Picture 1: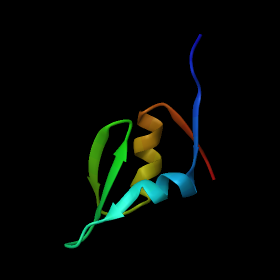
Picture 2: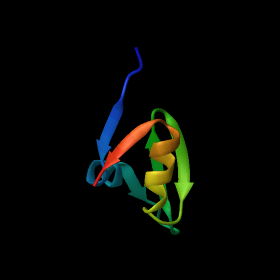
Picture 3: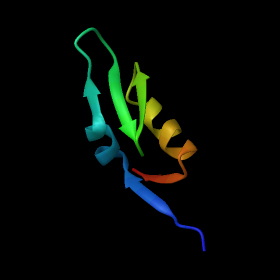
Length: 54
């Protein structure tokens, strides 16, 4: 049986922490990403198998 993972976009944005010199650090399932725009979060979450709820 496959597990379905869901997350709200607002929750995922809260996981992104702004960096002092620009961009954000976003950690999902123990993997850290350096992103420039929070809109990248949806793509990353989808790669991790999440269904993002807007």
